Image 1: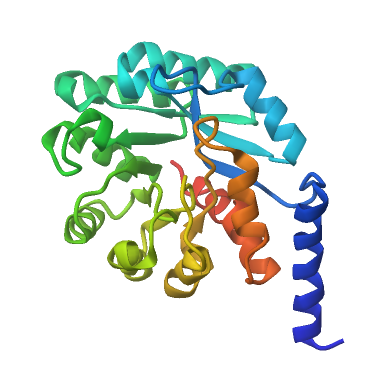
Image 2: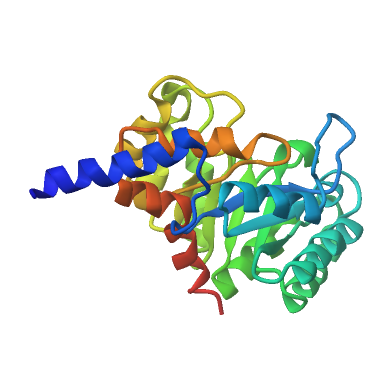
Length: 272
């Protein structure tokens, strides 16, 4: 059988799994973008650790990176405690990320270090909810810790492409992940995608509440599958919808597997 035929068969296998609703057992799936605990602004079923793991089991998801909605919206330490407790309840399944509040800049370094000491494996920023610029001084301790320990740092909001490029070069040990890079039309996100294609420590997250025809495939073509990480944004968004965008796309099985889990697994191996 030719290499092309082998690729076609393998791709069809994963596509059929998705269409049949078969759990993705045997394929490493790590969701790099999950919220935990309720948020007041909209309904989120199954938002606690037990509910999330039930969803993961149903679709065949191995691990999920979780960050607290409370930490993002209201209470940095209290919310981070929820994420850390979830990771302790489901070790190896739920992976806690620490969330800084840039408006409490004098507390950020100690709080994130506490999270790392208690098992957190990454950092989450949400610049739009915080109403704080990506390159503002309140986030510097997060960049410095992520750089020192070679951690993934996912941010909803990264400023302009030039800002992202500058910060990524200033902190080369940090694995910067652009949240929601998979959302919006390719023309609106092309510059950020180009940064990921050119900067070795910048990655793109698939989470999107709206998808345009061909936008995901275009992102893979422009940045390369090795620079893209699967993210669902659950329970704020449905995990199966986001999986379908990957599994039903016209890319190879090898590319799908890298996006679904292998890329992030390699980043975690660099943690120190």
